[in-house]
Image (tube, rainbow, N blue to C red; front, side, top):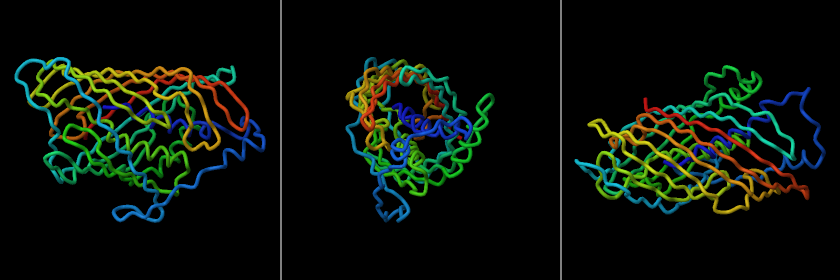
Length: 339
């Protein structure tokens, strides 16, 4: 499992300013700032032969080396070689709930922390084919909605609910190996969506591949521990991620795992996606998370999963010749259940 949820929720945060603004409290913008916000790169359109079209932007998922998995403790007996073995033609329905609290300091001015209403994703995983060494899977997002928004800003809730209405019927076609590693694939993103929503859709679809637990090559048993090290791309940042897994319980129905994750930034230079002309240098990056999940290798999706991620980031931003320091703290939660 990789923390792709970081980039998904970062994408969701792009919606917060518009959800909170009103005519009475929105500060005036100078002409250059307004023009910069309007400037958007033209997305490349690729007509797809299988599920895309002229109104869809096809985004290829970059192939990357699978995470390196090392067994730290093989555990007790009985031991077995773990491999995902879903049935071809089967379908798994999942529900993901994402939440976030974020605080920012810009130009020395601390802004009040913002807690977003929980966002719920209803999705399906269709297992198209299972071969000896790989699986072909289609993930479909049936819709997104706002969860229990008690205490949240009513304007934000209403705006987010309206925006999320269009987040439906999107597909990601993925190729995975039997140990859960992503081998390749593509995402079809509707161009009719606003730019932040396109970005969020792309990241959301790619995140489905990242929730897979990387399984070890060797046979393991109850109490086994293994470490997976790999790189991920999150919101324009290249990150090395180390995940420590422990099988705390093994039953006939599957296994219970706990995971601890640390992330390390590999490149301090950062170009925020969807913001041409803006560049930044990250001078502080601290990201770690913990989680618990129940897993059965008869299915692709975890039976149940809950993670918490904490991120601290500080950066120097430059846009149109002006520089500004920005610090950010995020506390993010992700829950997932197979229905």
